[in-house]
Image (cartoon, rainbow, N blue to C red; front, top):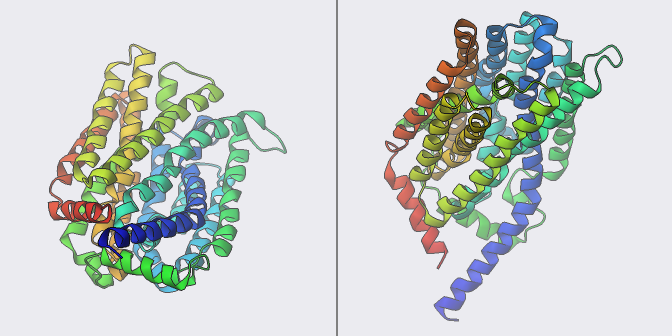
Length: 440
């Protein structure tokens, strides 16, 4: 058989394995991530009713929204180490079930203290989920497809905004005072229980390793393991994931992008309301539009990044697009329409930084090193999920406007974009060579 025919045959087998693996794993992962992100969307909407009901100031809401990430950060690395040892199916099932129950229990909060305490424990319950999913995906998909795969399952982030925004608004306005509960309380119940159902589905549908994949033949398993392993250049121990300076650099980069993301998304309904829109359902529908734009932007830039093998410029472009548009959304507040359009573009760029970012650490971390490296990145990065919403609330209370806070978030995104180019270019070039070699 000629070299060309052998290459064509290997490519056909690889694509067949990719398709089987994709359709067996990604749907349940996407569903779980959508439910996960509903936690972020629903609390932003709950604020519109919950804050006056239980006496939350903007500062108290920002603190409660952000304290979730303190619990998340403290237990992120231990959680991912347990996932590596116990297996993804068992541990992620545990995460999904416990956070679903605690999310539903938010209906019982009665004031700032109970709100903060429950949010803290919710963060503990959810710790390890995002890096665990990232670790799991890196063990199943080779570098040549990883950018698109990460973008596809991370469309769950904006999809949850598209679905959750109008759904949260509908739940809050359709069941007020039913059975003695307010609309925001019903919303937490209805959007918390699906996480429990996803946990049950994860247990029955997701195998721990390639060897346990019943849909692949022995030859396909061997081929997939060989390709995944050949594209990873650093294995390491648990300690190596914590001592690698590249990981710490990526922690700072991720911190910047997550700060911009949560600083805007936790306040998005409030930002839209400040433009002069008052109805909860109207705000819900409008909040879905920035997330819809983010889905398209994510997929387009991820496809371009995989096609060219270039990572850093795509990531920096998304961050700078988001930062510039966020500034424009403030400057154009005299015209509600143009300000909202700028806000749509800002969210599209900021949200897109997250999947594009993960092309960098997945290029050189694997195994135990990846378990701790991914967890360290997300735990430190997600500390900004505490800092950003809290500071936005403080600035808003102090100045009576979110303008200064939005400028600060834009600056943080620009800072992250600059740091991206300190990441060793060899990581990008390596992915590029892999891409063109496998595409022959």
